[in-house]
Image 1: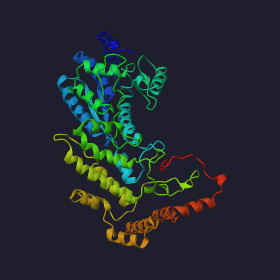
Image 2: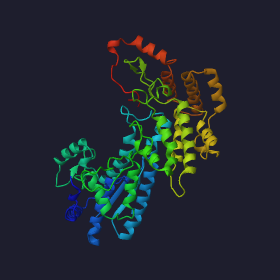
Image 3: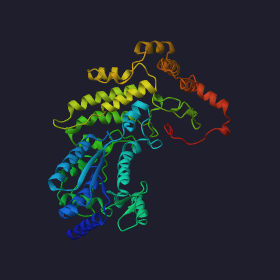
Image 4: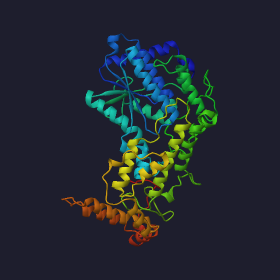
Length: 493
């Protein structure tokens, strides 16, 4: 596909299409913005198109720009997006545009660190991809559904393109066949929302051609965006495209800096390699590699850090190797990851370039929720989070009074730990039973107490992994056993 396709006449006709769709009805528009090239081109095209309308027509309805911050976004990209959203607010007001930017974030209970460190969910992998829906899909879907509730329907504008991949092209072609009116496809996952993809037929080269030929209306320099893509390219090349034979940097990918769904974070590696000023990102890359450390088979090697039981205490055996299909991270590894994260946060805050606005790697709200899970749900009454926080930061933990004070603390925990030795199942059994009974003291209604105690006993019925495997082997004949080919970490919930 030649970049000559994007002539002034072509752009003019495309802008007229945008204007006509905008004026056809009163349904609010929602534009997905990630800060990348495709969403930038889409928003820029819409902005220029609507700006040409008269003031009265321009404010026919609102245009919402939504950007989902997973709270673990790559810091360089996160800073770019946050700066862009602030500029959009200012530019929309000055230019009298009906554009309303929104920064969306996951619910605290759904955040990455609350689930990884708090609940102990193992690092996301292809067999257990728990992160995408919680961090990305749910926040935007919640926003869209609220718009649908208020207006009956809504139109979602996306920068998806057929040239991204064969699978994407096939998916878009399928949706085209179900278009109820020209250019609008039904949203397969959200009822009463329709999808408009104005740059669906553009190539990577054409996207860059457009961004570099047409001025960004909210005030960022698209050449800086190009430089960011170039910096994330392994070969440090992202040339100005002149024809279809020129390679493009359009395949550079940005995402969560903790992402373990790929074996290596090539974009962050390239940024550090290509720009000495970004060496401060190295600790983040190191932690990501530690969480996603892979074995010789290319699978995440965290078996020793995980409980031999599932979250509910059940046991599943992988009959290919005779091992248990492991569950959540154990207490020592969760505490280690928290300590490492806080240490790295201290490091990057002090080493990031002057004036660079880096948001916390973990928020206070996430720390508070992690502590609540550890103390109240996992009955870890040693309450180690404030201790780790003070040891790393040198400051007292500021939310000590969040949780009710129990009768037991670190001294009692250490005593039970000494009595139980290295057997963490016994430690969990004793500490949980004591904590549940202690917290029930003084309650008039104790109907749930026996159920809680029973659940703990059932969960801790096996002395260790060998005991669990022996019991399961004796209980079940092999023909009756579950031969499902589970990926370790799957179905932990």
